[in-house]
Length: 231
Image (tube, rainbow, N blue to C red; front, side, top):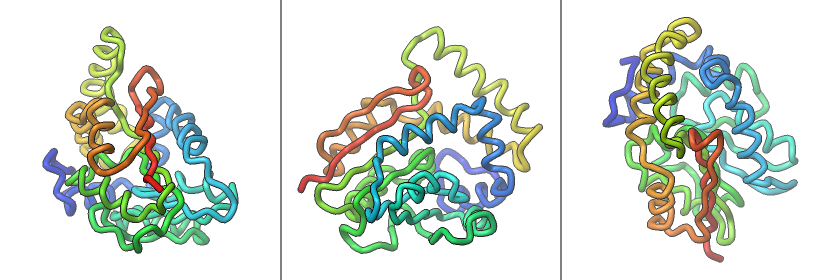
């Protein structure tokens, strides 16, 4: 299985990411027109990692997203359930404590982290609400969550253009740069079926997070959600 279906069975999603690990970061650069680098900077700013703090970077893939946190002096744990991604990450960043884990059953104790974050991975989890509860569980009281995920463009004309890009232009581009272009057909479909900004905020609140807020990036193509675990 090299392409997941929208019911997002964990073994299918893990296998799909195993097959794209080698060129994953390059493909993301190309398909996002290098906007993904800006989005990750916004994530780092929102997480606001500090020296000595413990940060969980869930769905970290090859660990590229974890580097900005490590550079602040924080102790960052990159976690992913794709062993192929983790192996590729270990080649590139052997000093990072890359950890295999399922977002719905995280292998960490209660209250282990000052901050938890997941970028472009929550959409791929089989049970979104279970993952949000697990992130809540492993966060210290007073700690914070930052979620960066594809969302829905807020301006109707732009949304139409963007959706056309997803379904028509993205697959041919993926065929040119990815080792598994079918995975990016799933990507396009999963973005379209994902809840909107307000709905995701509601799921965060339901999981127990307080002070939930979001802001749109790139016209709502991406949304950055934040929340705090009550002290």
